[in-house]
Amino acid sequence: MKCPSCGSPDSKLKVIDSRPADSKSIRRRRECQACHRRFTTYEIIESVPLSVIKKDGSLEIFDPNKIIAGVRRACYKRPVSEEQISAMVSEIETELINTLRDSVSSSEIGNLVMEKLRDIDEVSYVRFASVYREFKDAETFMNELRGLKEKK
Ligand SMILES: [Zn+2]
Figure 1 (cartoon, rainbow, N blue to C red):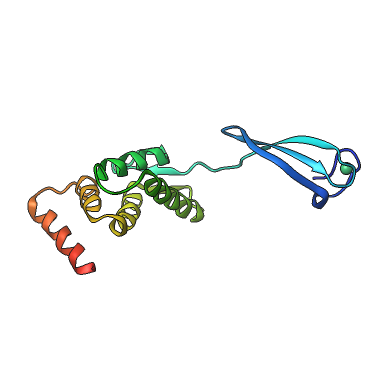
Figure 2: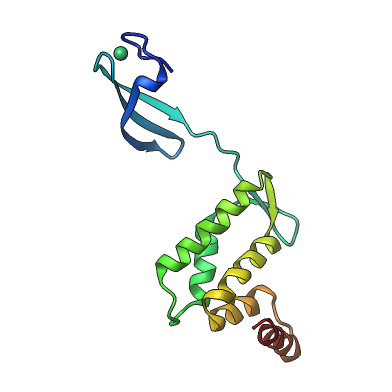
């Protein structure tokens, strides 16, 4: 990008304000350090939506809010803050996006959540795992608990 007024290169253009215009673009105010003209640009965020492959094989767009809702249920009345939950989920989102794949299975996401939740709060972890892994009986549940103890 060059200054539309004096043609100075990008390095002379200082971003003075940057905010989302809508969900697909960012509005940036720039000031040219050479001629001091200010101008606005709209940049389209190029994002490839990440798809989630569900257990039944259907696809849905990755939605961090769904993960947050699931984790929040597992953490009900536990000493886990909203900040911890959203930090955890955005970490997971970043990890998934960094793999540069366009789809991920719901079980991979579940495993990532369990991995992180285990370090934050064991009770929440077991709750999440019991919903997520759909423990069919007490034995599977006990196995999970034993596995938890061994990992300590
Ligand atoms: Zn300029």
